[in-house]
Structure formats: C-alpha cells, structure tokens
Amino acid sequence: MQRIRIFVSLVKNLIIKNIHSKFGFIFVLLFCLNYTLFSKSEPTTGSASYYANKFQGKRTASGETYDKNKFTAAHRTYAFGTKLKVTNIKTGIWIQVYVNDRGPYAKDRIIDVSYAAATALGMIQPGTIQVKLEILSDGDVIEIPPPVVHNQKPNSLSPGFYSTKLEPIQRPKGYLLQIGAFSSYEHASRRIGELDDYTIGAPCIELITVKKKKLYRVIYSGFATKQKVTQKQKELKKKGFDSVILSPK
Image (tube, rainbow, N blue to C red):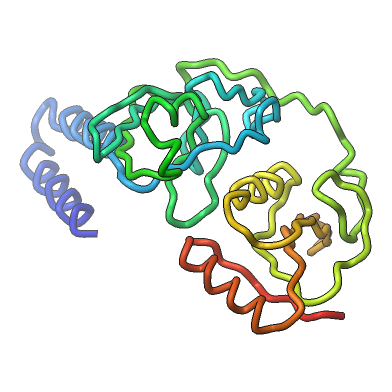
C-alpha cells in the first residue's frame, strides 16, 4: 500500500508539471507503462516443492503432458508459457523453467517444479527449499498446445464417493478429513499427490453439487475417534494445509 501511495503521488506531480507541455501526456503514459513493467518483473520469494513421480505422463492444466525430465513448473497465477528464473536462495544455484500447470495449493508454497528442475536446484533430499522467482519473459513467448481431453469420465459422474481412480465406493466409516474442494478432478488428484509425503490415511474423492456446479472434495479416512482426526488436522495445519473434520454418518 505504501508503494501504491508513492506511485500515485509521483504520477500526480508529473501530471501537474507536464500537463501543459507538448509531450506531457506521452511522458506520463510512458512513465506509467515503465512502472507497470518494472513492478511485474519484481522478484518474489517463498517455498518451492516438486512433483511426485505419480504425475509422470499426466495431463497438466495447460494441456501439456507432464514430463519429469523437462524444466517446467506450476504456478497459481502466471500465464502458461511464462519463463521464470528460479534461484535456490541458500546455494545461489539457479535454473530456467516455463509455466505449464497450476498449483501448488499449499499456502506456504509459491511454485512446484519438475523432477529435473528439482534435481538441478538440489531439493530432492530436503523436499522443499526457499527460492526467488524472476520473470524472464511473458506467457505469449512459448506456444502451449490447447488442452486435449482424453477422458470425459469425471464429467459424467453422479454425486457420491469415489476411489482415486474414480471407481464408485461406499462412504468410508469413521471420522473423515476433507483437505480441499476443487472444480476439477485433475486439481483434486493434484492435491492428493501433494499429500503423498504425509502419512494421513486412505484418500478418496467425494463428488458433490453446489449451485449446479460440481465440486471434487479430497477426503481422507481411517480415523476411529475424533481425537485422532483432530490431531491429524493440527499436524496438517502446521504444514500449510487447511482441513475440515466430517463426523460419521
């Protein structure tokens, strides 16, 4: 907010000083454009993780097939095709990746990188590292093929509980832990992959309809008592994952 106030003040002063000048308007316009581009390329820092092996060959949000040997990444907001410089803050090692997927969905992480990129950054053993992200080029530089839908099965399902392979199952017994709700099966499956490294319970997916829109809820079962499910909820909270406890029916 402080930077925005400073920027507004600068623009206001420039307009006042140059409004009667022949090139005043052009000068102010160029100044605003230059500031916007500078802000857009400003580095960001945070925690990075990498794809689990189970995602090899799976379709990404851009339509590309995930290849663990390519230098790719998932980001929540950057346009597909955006080239990023990713630097390991601790070691100074840096690599270049391009964005072709969405994620990560854990609050404490800003980027997921491919296995090859993670290896180059030295993050296989620790699992996550602190990184600095810098935009090298915008998303219109690299052409990403349009999404190709290979399987329409998730769209034809009725509300209910399903295995991670979308096979119909009964509602699991005992207390359940919901760790996210997503508008697509791909994103729900992605969340399950992010949780692979944690011992939680048996994962499944519950498909529900809210205001005529489908939601895929990631559910974990195997909790006999409320004490056990509450303890697991606290553990996941420390890892950056919010969850909701569902009582037995």
